[in-house]
Image 1 (tube, rainbow, N blue to C red):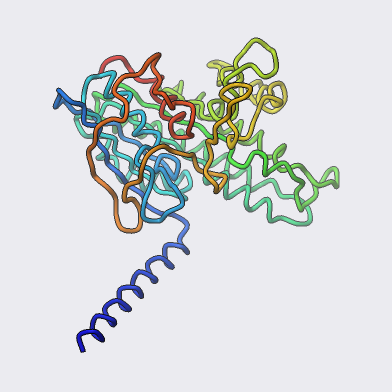
Image 2: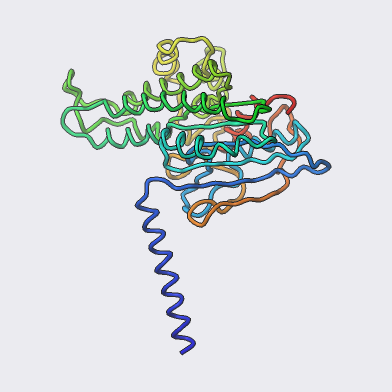
Amino acid sequence: MTNQFALKRRVALFSIVGVLVASQAMASTLTQNVSWTIDRSGTTTKYRITAYGDSIYAGYNGSITSAAKNAATTVDAEYLSALWNADIENVRRCKSGAIASDIYNNKIVSERSYMQSTNTRVVTFEMCGNDGLQARSSFKGQTGTCNYGVMDTALNNCTTYQNAAMSYINANAYAGTTLKVVANLYYPGYNADNVLSSCTDATTGAKVNLRDKFLPYIAKMNWRACNTAASYGFACVDDFAEYMGADYDSNGDGQIDSAALQYVPGESESSYVTRITSTLKSTLRDANTHFATSSTSYDYIQSDDTHPTYNGGTVTAGLFGGTTGTGAARYTSFTGGKNPIWNQYGHERMGWALSTKNPATP
């Protein structure tokens, strides 16, 4: 009887888990919240960096129950801890798979209390990646005459909610916040998209190259993110340039590729789009092979060809709740403002890029 009862309990438990997993698999989003504090020895002063976003800031790693501990904003917390000689709490309020409107309404607005804490000094967000991914998936499935409206809608929604997010954060973040920053989009699947569409253009009657069609839309999203940031008093981290350009001068124009691709304050949208899609297009590289030098490269993208690679372990985040934890920094000092692996993983690169915007004092 005891063995039969134990067996029934295990079957029941597996059935419940099975239902939960199946229901999550059918859902389009997965909440992945984490709070991790970098505990610096010799101090008890603690400041907070609050991060809102989708799977990128969540540290998504393909699991519905865990995420990268050292996602980009936690990496930045290590830099802040050393810079300010303080403990830094990184609160990540994220929803993997969420489009911009979802992040705005259900994270930034509904969970505004996290940026209203009196120890908040940095508020950052990223969005629009899933708007773009869903539009790309929809377009790839088209046959007959191409309908570019799905990409226009993604661009317009991204613009609308990035503006709304910055306005709302300005109105609701703790008054002592010293930095507000938005991160723009890299292009996952850059090489994979170098194929022809199944649909045909209404004007030419020919199939279109997916990469050539998508790149201008991403460029417009990214220009608008950084241009809007300037008008709202936000800093802008140009992840596109950091991921898609090599860290050496590959075309002999006298500029490091990743620097040459950066958004230039005051540049018009049309000028920026031309620079990215034409003038410097030959320097763009799939982030699966990010060149640190002409002979050394690192993989910034996981095997799903979408999410950034990371260093270190994972924490519970997803189906069974989130993690609230504390731990020492991996690195406590930074030569030249960079940790030893700053350009070897996607999340490390993004975290370092965020750190370049950090104010000298809290």
